Length: 239
Image (cartoon, rainbow, N blue to C red):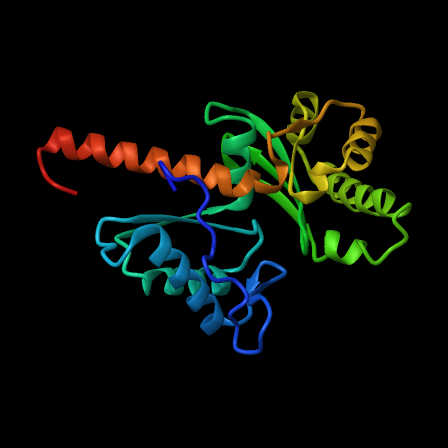
């Protein structure tokens, strides 16, 4: 949130069955009622009761279907906000880690708790993407010595698949610039170093890879608000 940074659920662990509410699994909303409660608590803490001029940026897994995006939109609409900006998590990660002026092809590798995604962006648009419904939470059950190899192999398999379908050399160009690594997996040097070595290129990490997506969404939110303020001043009309 501009001016306040990250705003978290003020009362976590207040689900119907005790323990933390986890209404989102594998990037999908599985419990809309619980998700609405969590979002409502965060909105109360961040925005207060009057949300008539508020804007929310929603990021979603790059391969989330229309059904899941619609469900998320409906929940956010129930918060009483004026506008919802929807974008993929890959675009949000790129905005924070690579900067808003990044042009040409860019490869974003997001290694999260329950999903692993590889996305090819070309001039900010999704050109291709792959997703594995596994992440660090699944791999933590493995022998710790095997985790880096398994995670890196998952990433490399997806990049190889995209390379085979790339007819315009975008993957090659993205690799020359270096892929952006995000998610909790990017906090592990044994993973990031191996990816760089196997690909034969440098990799790019944001200051805090585990929050790259949400911080990128925050940057986009700030940009939307600045644009709205400028437009309002030029037109002489209130928001």
